[in-house]
Length: 211
Image (tube, rainbow, N blue to C red; front, side, top):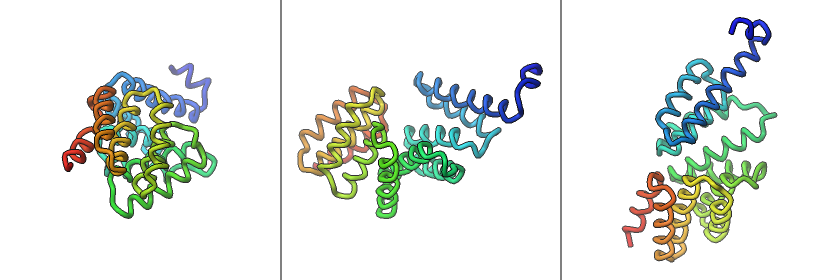
């Protein structure tokens, strides 16, 4: 290790070290252990508290776990440490903030979600997650048909089961708002098959129970 340190600059060593925590967090997350992934990213943040990629990873994990307030705080902290040259990273952070906002609800959050998701969409609108978030926001602001179209495209494009399940839940909400509770219920059942642990399932169940 000492030999490697002599070959590499301090900055390069730190970059490799940060990358290790990012990759390890991603590996743990991919294999279904969000809690272990969160522990790993927290260890990285103890050493690099303002590194936006680690902050972004933690924010995304908290989002999946339904910790919306904590996720928003972390993601906005990450955004404050992104420079103007990091357009793609900025777009991804704006998208995650917008997604947390639209799930959290409320006039101010929806307004922020609309602004942020549009900016993210303008940069990397081809991305499935960005299309899904923009779709959810459009539904929230009353453009239900346009939102459903984007959510369907996002669901088709992504191979991640949790992502598909969240899209299905959001489509269930949208179809309920559009006046088709039976189609909404079918999307809910699809979400349960895709990922029974999806955090949006209970939210949709409560909505449909109002019928």
